[in-house]
Image 1 (cartoon, rainbow, N blue to C red):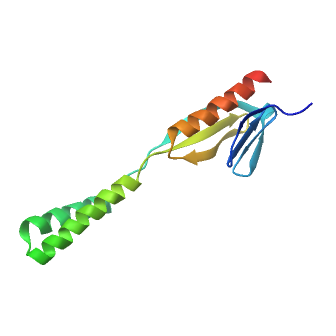
Image 2 (tube, rainbow, N blue to C red):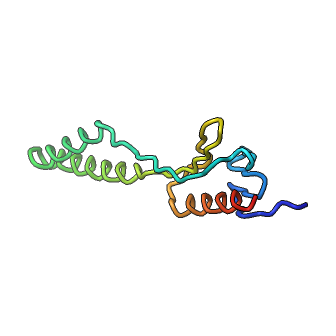
Image 3 (cartoon, one colour):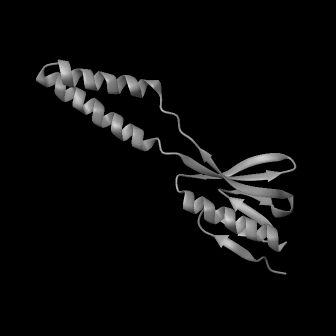
Length: 123
C-alpha cells in the first residue's frame, strides 16, 4: 500500500506512517501528540546599554558624537527587529519530546502541525 502524503515541501514530509523534518525521520506510530511551541527571544542587557549610550550621546555630546549616537540607536533598532520569536513543531512521544522544525513563521508551523494531526487521526 502506498503512503498517503498529508504535506510535502522542501523541509518537511508528512505521510500516514512517517514524518521527515530537516533530514530526521520520526515513525508516526511513536508520536503521541504534536504542538506548536513559541520560543521567546530574550533581549540582551548589552542592547539596553547601547540604547542608553546612543540617547546620551544625542542629548549631551558634540555633533560628531551625536551622529555616532544616532547610529547606535539605528543599530539597536535593527538588532531588536532581528530578535523575533521563533516557533517550533514539538513532537511528543513516550520517549519524551523533540523540536523537529523551527521557523519564524507561525502560519507555516501551524500548517505542519495540522498535517501531522491529520496523519495521526488517519492511522
